[in-house]
Length: 386
Image (cartoon, rainbow, N blue to C red; front, side, top):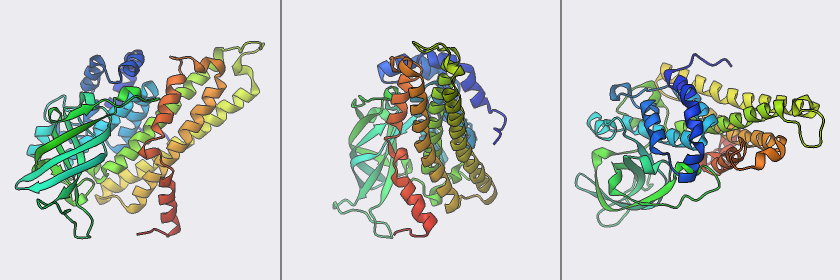
């Protein structure tokens, strides 16, 4: 696979990489992106990569978006994670009317963040919903201007509102960040700079126009090919690119170290060791293979979206499989690079230590679950369960 010419967004990442790398330790220490980094990201349009062009967004294709996430993650994983989360959330602009999209995303420094609900109650009232609840794992909450979250709907008498199929209806609601109370709970092994904290709201009225059925194609207001991809598809692709980028950063660091390091008590540099030479080649092959799988699947899906105006179940399944494969391969590659670097890797601030923690933290979240392989396997075997 040969990469297409770099987009302006990808060029921007390569240009500012040294500035971002210089802030990596501060990002981790403060558990959030500092103002100077946020200024840089806004100047580069990083939070608007998946917004429609009419809303001053880049409206990148999913493959190009994944390339940007990969490049960012090779520099700093927390920055890439926050950008990936916010950019994918911003696809909400395609699910609400234009006036509402401008209200949420019209300001040049608008950022939307959300996370899974851990107990929500949205009562259907005239013109909207009265929402109470708690949402967790909200990456980038400290620089978000708008928040959102999925809500289970209830009738005024307290009974669940049901869909035609009998399930409880769920909608995603959007509201200004100042209406929420933030709980700082993110004290973790890695990805510390994401500030992935929680928030609550109580009896907050949200108008119906600021709500939508996430990933329901019938709810689209924007016909652009990008929005044939669901939030789920884009989160899978984007975060898979993030973990591959972290692995790429670690492998490149190992190669650079091996060229110069002579281990204590040895007479030759690591670069002259046949086992090290074989290891580098094998790891490079594994990383390129996982990457090629992901990007070839995204190429095929984009061709389908631009041609048919929709994604087939086959393409959605392929994205899921390629993303899960990336989440399986990336930590295995990084672990080998970490081991090969020897004692150098264990020191705080080394090229390896933070990447090890960041990647193993990333694999613990939803995209890294092994059960996704089961889902794909059932489909391939024709044994899908209802």
